[in-house]
Length: 251
Image (cartoon, rainbow, N blue to C red; front, side):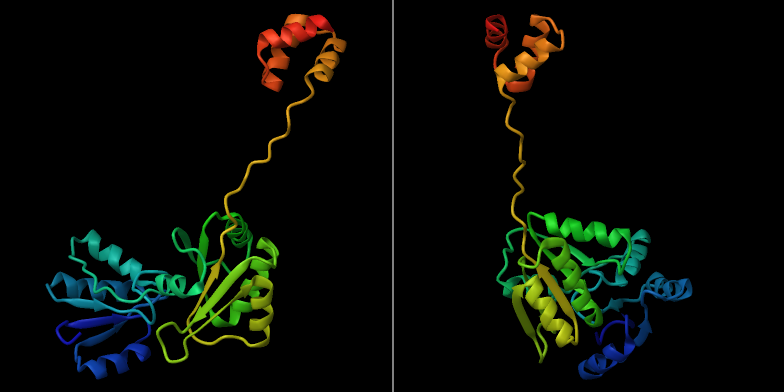
């Protein structure tokens, strides 16, 4: 931080104390989801003149559900070398303390606040064969848990992790119904990660094959030839054509 010409941050109010603590005196540049194209051009100009720029985020890892992704893409498009300083990500941290399966997982970030796309993703969570990790703003956590309970069933296991790696870190596990009730009464504060247990592998329920003799009688009653009935019977029930033809002849 002390070596770069500028530090790009989503919220400079959060980053300024960090830079002061580190003794960094480079320019502090704001870049967030609502920044203008001019702000992006300013940063790219610094990079174009050969200066080093650091990108930090308010919490977690830059570019993961974070507006920094746009800056990284723009820099790469101009052949700027982009390197990472590995740091914490709430996804991995939450999985490690949730008690839910973490061998495979899906990260969906922030769901849309409303509309068909939100409903589609809620259904996707409900059917997922793997643990699903979501981000949510504190005031909307209870509503998200209620929607998840409606989509997945209130008994689905879940966990809510907040303020991970910070002073007031807390992880609460339970069913979606229990967690929705808890956070409706005690709205959370800070950075929140929601995890939903997997539904497990879906078993396709296949209808049993029809009774061969009854089906053969029904097809014959429709006026079909014995040969055609045997062909259709074999296709529908899985028995061999010879067996089907013998059954038809016996009828």
